Every structure is written in structure tokens, then in C-alpha cells.
Length: 405
Image (tube, rainbow, N blue to C red; front, side):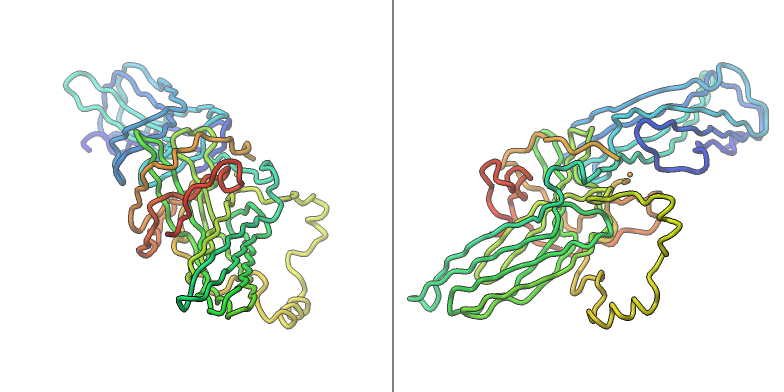
């Protein structure tokens, strides 16, 4: 690097995650082995979103900017050899959307610093990406605490001359969950035929919609569980628990180019029948009440050992741990804490093409971008049509074709 030995941006207290409307403070640090003449030293804070038509392509087809602020840290002069620190502070906009990164686009917030040198000399630049988290409060969504229920009836023929039908009903205890919460699923199969049904599969799907010149859908299976079907002329009930893995929040308030939706799809393999339940993934749990300082002092952090043994003996299973669950991708999401309710977004037309990359993952940030590589899900055969919108699933508009053919 010649005379410039160090040129970097440091955030106060080593922070990486900020909230909208919060001040962002830091410093530009420079270390020189010899004097360096300069025309200006600047730092810029930006937030923007870009969407492409190709996977992992940084040549954006559509872009939108959320903020762009610059500060001049020093004007024309010469820096002597040694270490120099230039502090700065920006006020982040209250409307800044949550950071997000996907295969066809990203919402990125970053700092850029530059040292402009005299003519014919090399300018120096550095940058630092930080995360903004605008949390989704599930309690702000209407009817979020109500059970989620959907039913499908399949009529079919068997043994050439006989006909029958199967009624598939799926329900969850809530309509919204936070990462690490248990989603309680119940599936009822009423087999009104003389033929056994195939097994039933429940899949948690993530659909990311990108608004470029055309709508692009990126759909992947996040978690999947499988249960037994129903015997001929029998009614069966299947209860399962799905632990919500690390995921980006539903919706991205403040961004008009990227939308995130989640669906629980329950699929009966034979005869083929499918029901789809829209669900929200947020950051503040349904009916969550922060504990008071007094209760925090009185309530023990864990139940007595004898109570835990009693619970285990009574149930025979861990009341929280899901069984037979396959998590395809434990590491996705944007940064995630009190955000406004998701607004009704302009949905894409039902005929928009579906573009699916194999082995898709969405980077997840919790407190800082994860250092470990994400676990890629196995190849998965997706349908040509994307899941219905939340409004379609609730019956507000005519539903589109099902996910399974």
C-alpha cells in the first residue's frame, strides 16, 4: 500500500446492527508511513435496493435509494506520518427498510470513505456494510392470534368402477410466529373411499418476489415433515410440531422492490390434494408482554428439577422439540427488532414467470453477518406457479392454481 498502511471505517462499540431513526457513530482511521497530501477526506452513508434478472448479478435492472448523506472530514492539506482518526455521525432515517440479501437482489446499507489526492496520484477508498433492523411486531397484524385453517376435497376413481373422496384439513394454532417458536400443526384426513391414502407432507415455504422489468419469484422449502395417511373408510389425525428456523421477516416495510412471504403447504401424495396456509414470520411474538423488573426478580429462570422430571414422565417426549422434522436451510434471513404493520403491497400478476434457482438460500444476520457458510438445501422440484398471495389465501380475491400439480 506504500505510504498508506491502514485505511478503514470503524463503528462505535463495534456495532453492526442499528434501528431506523437511530444515530450511527464511528470513525475513519488512517495510518501512514510517510506524509500524504490530499484534497479532501469524505465519508458517505447510503441505503439502497437493487434487483437483477440473473442470479447473484450485481448489474441491477431496477434500483431505489433510501438515503445518501455525505460528510467532509478534512479539507485540502497534508497528513503527517502516523495514525489519524476522523470521527463522524449520521442520523439514520426512520423509514429505512430492514437489510436483506437474496439471489436476485438486496437491500444494502453501507459506509464509504475516500481520500482524494492531488492530480495524477491514486485516490484511496474503503467501505463497510452495516445492518438496519426494522422489526415486525406480529401483534399489529389483524387476527394474527386466531387459528389458521384450510380444507380441500379430492374426488377420484379407483378400480375403474368405484369412486371416492378424501377431505384434507390442515390448521395451525396461530397465523404468525417468531424464529425459534414452535408451530403446532394438525392435519385431519377423512378418507371416504375403499382405498388407503398415501402419506402426507407438510412444508414451510419461503417466497421472495423481486420486482424487476417482470416479476421474479424465488421459492424454496425451509422445513419439511412427513406423516402417515388414512386407511380405507377411516378418519385419521396427525399432529406435528415445526420449529421455525432462522428466517427473514415477512414483508419488508419501506421497500417496494422485494417482498417476502411464507406459506405452510400440506400435501397428500395419493390421491393428490393440497392445502396452503399463509403464515407471518416476525420479530415480536403474538401477545408478547415484556416482563416487569419485579417479576424478573421473583420468577426463577428454570423450573425445579423434580417438576421437569414430572413433565417428562407425563408426556414421554420433549414438549418443545419437533419430531421427524427436516430443516433444509437453518441459516437464512435479514437482520431482525417494533416495526409497523406490513402494508398491502402491489402483488404481481398470477401469470408472472417463476424463476427458481436450485439450492437457494438467503443470508441471515442476527447480531452480525454469520461467518460460517450457509447450509444449502437439496435439490427440490418446484411448481411453475408461485404460492398465492395472503389476500388470495384468505379468500379476498380469486385464488390462483395450487402449488402442486
